Amino acid sequence: MDSTLKDMKAVLLVGGLGTRLRPVVGSTPKPLASVGNRPFLELLIRQLRQQGIRRLVLCTGYQAEEMERELGDGSAWDVSIEYSREPSPMGTAGAVRFAEPLLRDVQDFLVMNGDSFMEMDFRELAEFHRRCGGVASMAVFCIKNEKRYGTVKLGDEGRVAGFLEKSEGEAEGLVNAGIYVFNRRIFDFLPGGPASLEKDVFPKLPAHGLFACEQHGVFIDIGTPDDYARAQLLFDRLNEAASRKQTLARLD
Image (tube, rainbow, N blue to C red):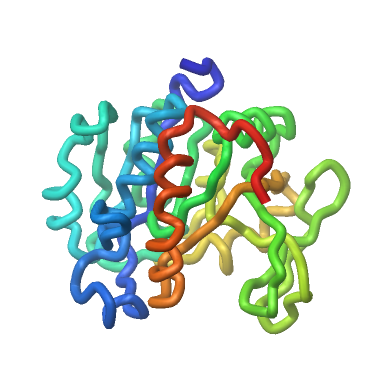
């Protein structure tokens, strides 16, 4: 197992309501929606396990009981799963803060959105984070934006200089992939109540060390019916990427 990832925990944010996808999947929690006849979240678990990350924390909320019943303790994938069940919707930042008691034994930890998948090497992101020495590092990718996403503006050596909102988005730019490595210092910046990493926390971090590491693999989220349908078409590639020990080559 890679020493960089040996003791790292991965926090998966899986508590969202997923209202835009309900016309397609009903009341099923979005991360458990079937892709290739298996829960989408299984792709993330297998990807983490293949790259040596075996300790997972799932931040649950909506349909938490179903999530826990489906995944159990993680032994089916040779990982260990702990659960941080939100008493009410807390947003991405609130969910991470609420999970802090399960993260006291780690200095750095990975955070991922549970409804998106990126073909990437977690070791590369972790090593980049440790070289930079900042509070947080995020995976970003270049996309022909069409103003759907906000973009990340970079300064020297991967330092994040700021963000542009969706309405200001450029025709092409770097987009936040929803995958981060946080140092424990992040808890100094997380509000006590419901809050968003993207809207409430990251805009305040550039002065304290926020960095971005560009990735080049395929990215997919399943937040809308159209993207969910695209994930079905991409399943073979996603399944292969989840089974790989690391990204072997750039795939455009």
